[in-house]
Length: 328
Image (cartoon, rainbow, N blue to C red; front, side, top):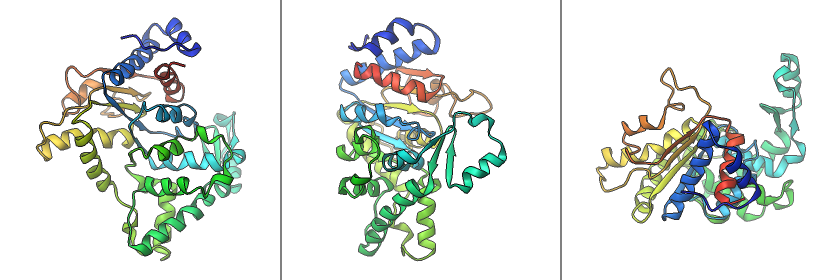
């Protein structure tokens, strides 16, 4: 099926991207569009440091235009979108990051600049600023005997307007703000290794937060996902668009075999579309680099499920796929 894309970017891609990974990109975008056109919905997973790569510039618009109906992301991507929202002016880009000496890396540490490839996140302006705001929410929930998921605490902060005067980018480029405004379901597996999670653990240790269960767990995320998936697929096929590898994708895709094998909900359909953007090598048992057909053996995808694999840099590929889907 040909996508109804009409914009200049889409026209360029259709004229130039004809073979290999370039062709796979266009085909995956067309499959995405066809899935939505048939009444399907799409679940997107975000690994790596895509928020620091400012994926929100394109991802937020996908959310606003109802091209995305649920998200799974790492704790890093959850928080780093907000870090960028309030501290963008203090970020530093390091074009020669491949050539840094250990002494230069130490200098960045001494200045509290945490490097993610070519970009340094400022600890005081980003991480500590958000810590002080979210700590208020953790303590308030703790005292009230309430428990919330990690993304729900972030939604509360963004929707409260507490950070509005601190925005340093156009808020339309924050994907998490767009998701909060839509109350989009978000799954954050392995949140415990994120910066804010480390801070939460510290505040539990010091006694600022009394109950470690104030923030809900990954198992509870899977339980939520099981019910949400069961409900949404009663009327719609749900596709799976995976950006990168790791737990952001591995965790949620397992909900289908869990529903079938552990809960005996045989009527629940398989994922209705699959695409992964990955540069992981398909070897040595790599799950992140495994070809989509391997997922058939695990009861995640079917023989006839549309499957696409784009082996390239997600920071390049994802915005282009989204441009095609949006008709830009």
